[in-house]
View 1 (cartoon, chains in turn yellow, red):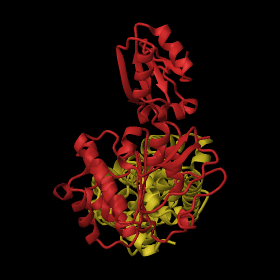
View 2 (cartoon, one colour):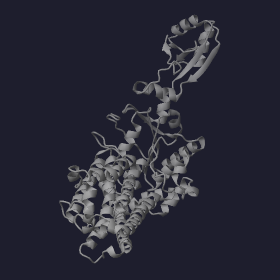
View 3 (cartoon, chains in turn red, orange):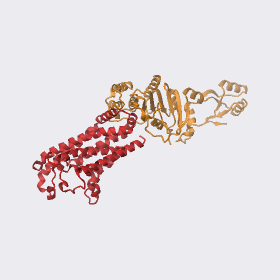
View 4 (cartoon, chains in turn cyan, yellow):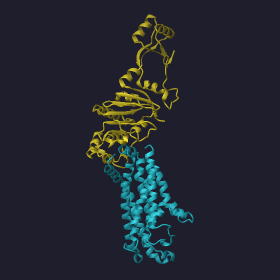
Length: 259
Length: 297
């Protein structure tokens, strides 16, 4: 067997020596924080114009996380590129010649990239939260309030898991272009649209993004949305099942197919 | 099926050429050695072990595959560094192999801007990284300029002289004749020959006498009378196997036959290779200007 620390080290070198790592993770952070800040400032100005139901379920934490909808796409791109470039560059053959134990290769890569995505995700959610609350003025909440810390840590976990889910999908599809072509429209359009269509909504609630992001709500049914049929951690559990499925699928494809 | 019942051994200390027409299964065979492609039956072992059972395989076997296998957006140095780290090869070795292939000056540049020859050198540096005893090169001279071809030939000979096992594929017989000591020929995934290069040349490079005469019918009779078989070349000349120019010249003089040409010829190795693989080539070019085989008269 190849030595695990050696393979982890090698995968860390792969990640830190390409520029796409820096720009995808940096844009995940910047986009999320900036959009969250802008919307928090906007909400502060327009609070009195909100519908009564939105004011009744007002959730300052969710408002400060408004940028995640867009920022998560950068996480998806990061996850896809980490795995997909092995295939698009032809590096996969060299990588597997160096580490022929395919499980060791794939899971070392995902462990390193996933840990990095998780760290950036946590930094993103904490920054978004504190900056957003500062801009919300009198409508703000604090990290010490009930369930707020859970929502902020959960937000970071959610961002990191979006990247890991995408890594599994890219390992299954073995293509950067194909993976991005499916995941980006899915999370940005399909999931968002379906969550606003009656009936379809009941299915969309179990999509990885819808289920996982429930953890960021401090107020159930925040801002007039329908309360989810599961608890915040229950939703995170559903997302984890999706992530596990994509990783198992990715591993089986890598194991069976010729490289 | 790309490869069928193919079984052979490759020995250390010599360059073993792996020859076959395009689509014969050379790359597939090499990929199966590295465990990249799975054989439907049978196995490939290196010193008795499956590739995936090797600890730090880059220290046993280095390979240059046909397609580029490195990341274009990561510097040459870092591409090699992540490979070295995965097999616990000291980082100092990265600079060593870059020096060995003459890429030190571009170590910090990204391979996407490299020429074909530089890309090939970087691939060879990656193969040499673990200082392996076994090296496999898939079509290493493809697309290289004469200087690059010359460099690779010498490198392979040097590596073999150091006692390493060198296994190199090509679809060009002429290239193999210049580099390989031993030859394995396959066609449509089957073994056609497993022989030393000297033997192959001896056996397959047909020697014959080429003749032209205005008295063609009389010459044919005379040859026939002397028990020599003549075949007709495409341009009206005759080719005689199993005789020297002296034999044929004397014979013509005895019969008073005028000769316009009398020369000793050797068929090229390329021709011998084409004849050997003709039955197994998958994609024939049906062309009137293609090689014309002499027919019995």
